[in-house]
Image (cartoon, rainbow, N blue to C red):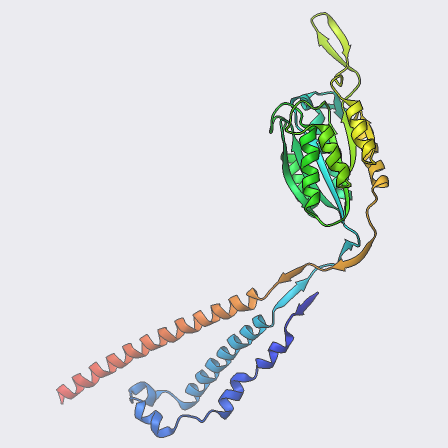
Amino acid sequence: MFEFVWPWMFALLPVPFIIRRFTPPKSTAQSAALRVPNLQNITQPQTQRVKKTAYFTLFAYLIWALLVTASARPQWLGEAISIPSEGRDLMLAVDLSGSMKQTDMRIQGREVNRLTMIKYVLADFIERRVGDRLGLILFADTAYLQAPLTFDRSTVQTLLDESAIGLVGERTAIGDAIGLAVKRFSEKEESNRVLVLLTDGQNTAGNITPEQSLQLAKANKVTIYTIGVGADEQVVNSFFGQRTINPSQELDERLLSSLARETGGQYFRARDTQELFNIYQLLDTLEPIEGNSQKMRPQSALFYYPLALAMGLSALMLIVGIGKSLLQHKRQRQTNISDTRGAQDV
């Protein structure tokens, strides 16, 4: 929808006419005293000069109208966007340790590593969290805040897609990831604080232990949902033929279960892509998106369009005026030369 923020500015449109109406015109004697007669003024018809003056006045008023339009602040209001009545902060903590390279997951029949599978499934989960503030933490040797809590889901998704295994080390700092999430939650107003932590290992690095971070989470009322990623069995080829191994033997399920249980969350096991899909659907049920009670419209300022046009017309008007002055000066000079030559001949 198009609208003007300050429509009362259009009351300034007749100002040039008012000034011209009540300002006394220049006297004929004064104008005659300042005018230098030349051949052009004699030969140029009076009606033609009046027309040029009228066009000049109309052009100047058009510029004034554009300036007034710009000062009225035209803007475009987009479609209404629903805003939740109660804020919800949801932080995603994704493990980027070396073990995430394990290719024990499948997407549409294609073998992929664990991080690729997490990105694939998280895309749909992030898209559905309309109205939630989402944040992203990446952790390995330590934890880093990749995206602060924001309503911009597309940015969070982009930053997740750009993450890479080994970006922050090879080990796993679960305690640091939880501690960083709690710190970011404490900087926001009261809301439903939820941390979804995805890992495939055990705590092997970091500045604080998972037990210490658990106490911080409980003190700040942060609910933790933990997800253990990795298959239970995988067939690999070796020198002695095929054999079955457990690629998730380093997964500390007891720790992850404790973190979730003590904070009022749940621990989930994601052995394949479908299980991770089901977990995210269950999270939507456990942490439902709040009903929308307020709406807002995004605003786009448009004042620079009439302002730019007014500046362009003013520049054109100036260029034409300078050109006409130079042309008149050239003609006057030629006339003076001709008059001088005629006088000499006489």
